[in-house]
Length: 73
Image (tube, rainbow, N blue to C red; front, side):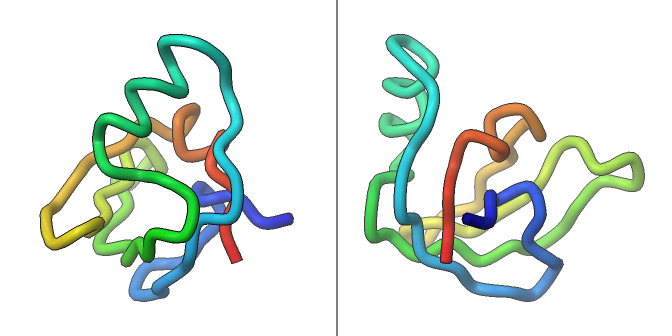
């Protein structure tokens, strides 16, 4: 499976599975990233961290480590 950190700028993907455990997974879910939601990748910082995405109509910046826990299709 592909993870969110590997998605190119301008692509829209759908969340298949959330990785991580406990507080980390809960924080990702609290940001609105749940299974089945669509995510549009807007920007990636020059060194690849953070990644700016649009999810549920708002913009969100994710650390590369957090994006690696989100499986997409």
